[in-house]
Length: 351
Ligand SMILES: [Zn+2]
Image (cartoon, rainbow, N blue to C red):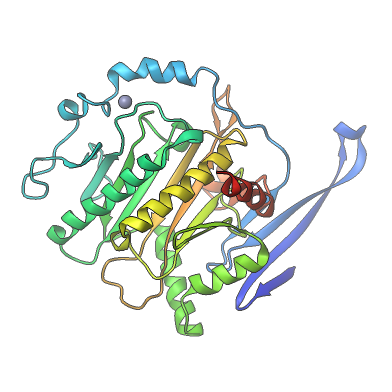
């Protein structure tokens, strides 16, 4: 085991070597390296198994999107006639609108307030070319919707904003759409992270994000800054072909975002999406990780996590999640986070 810390953040990694007779090298005895890394906050492990894998969108994706357009429930016209409406006392008029964006109830709710947010009238938007205006429309509308509805629900709820783009990420509609959920139960990952941040604050007297960002800068995994957001590639990876995280110190919820924060987030996310798309990726999950509205300790900095998704075998539609993710709670990556950071840094340096 090796430990390399910067400040109080400890980066723990365990290199492993597997010895085998490799048929690709005339059965020569070969060492194959892998590595286990531990998240410096939660201690959760993930694995890096370094081999190359091409990622590519289906060549007929454009044709599929066109074929789906007539039946798309999120396209202009349809959205007013086929999507559910909120009770009048929660959202006057039944749907929440802001410019092109519209929010309506999820027909298959995950919680008491579980919604779909369509940020654009555009039906077909490639990951390589998601406009800043679309991202700002989605995040700004989510903030305004939460701001309008949370007070009517009562309690210290979490306002969670997520996005599944394209089928490998679980998107069941091709038309861009996000989800906004208000809940008292934010899920296992957020609960674990917030508990660890409370412990960090009590132990060190400073919020974790401050120490983390200083350590990430020293480790070379910060890829860029937009406004008050810092974008970095986490030490312990969660995506098969990499992932990225944006952190906003000093703010803890989506409701805390001002218009400058929303615009700066859109600028950064567009660059990150382009960076991953340049490697052939075309689908992603995104989630904001907020604290709940009543927390006053200052333990948490609002973050957003981007996880590109892919079919391991596009013909067989083999997903990039298997028993490791689904049953053992373990992530693995085929890309070194430091190499992913280098690639995304280039995307940030392009106009
Ligand atoms: Zn559509």
